[in-house]
Length: 355
Ligand code: GLY
Image (tube, rainbow, N blue to C red):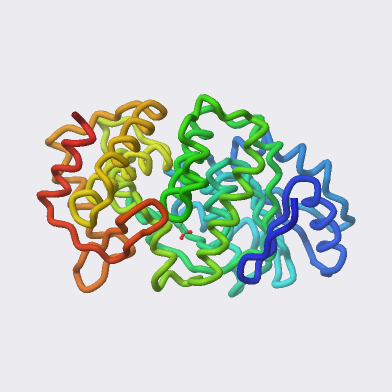
């Protein structure tokens, strides 16, 4: 698989990852190499990664607790302190080995420590391979509000080695798949159609599908790295999806949802709204509801949950001038950004999802 360059970041796949990494380390005279892992990737991914790393530089491992609940500024303070205590300097390298929490948080730590040190992402979950580690979005949550703090700044390199997916639980695979389905919906009917019968997908198809997803994301972030227009389309399903994810994360009566599980709901809701407001074919929305329902099941969202979820929409990062801006679809591959949606239609979309 050929490497892909997105903005100023190079993305390597499978067999080329480690030769490129070792060459990069050899070419840059890093004072120290730090590897950030979480409690899961420390056990399941780090040994494999270290076995491929060839360097005489000193290596320090920094571990954080796994889980979205730890993607916050307190965890950053812990990592900044570790870097400081372990004598990291501006010529140090941080390698983030993990899912979206590790790559987002580690990227933010690297971009801010001593005003910025070099970093590399080694995504180990499907979600971080196809989405989180491409495009330079780094950051953390603010309380239960998703990704409110952060900067856009690219890693020097992303290494996508799909061998890490072998240890990934099924629910995490499904979570990542939601972003791939979204890539199809916003940009390519051909890609979307490859997922139409998920039961026919084979594990051998995965590498090519991941590669295509990265190409789709690359095309978007190359054109609009700072999300002034086109990049907003990557947020299809995320306006309500993020609000649902935040609500479920902190509501003691709810089991928290993985990012992709919440986005899967958000995509069904956004598709309904698209049909009501911008002519997205009703039949396609019904097909999306059925496909996502079969694959992700139905999450119980009660009428009494609607107001709190809708309240959370005001923190969406696409908002401006007090407006909540949705991404909708006119057809598959034809997104429309900055759409205003009445609350009554949002409520109808919840009813559509639940019925
Ligand atoms: N995950 C959406 C983006 O990178 O813009």
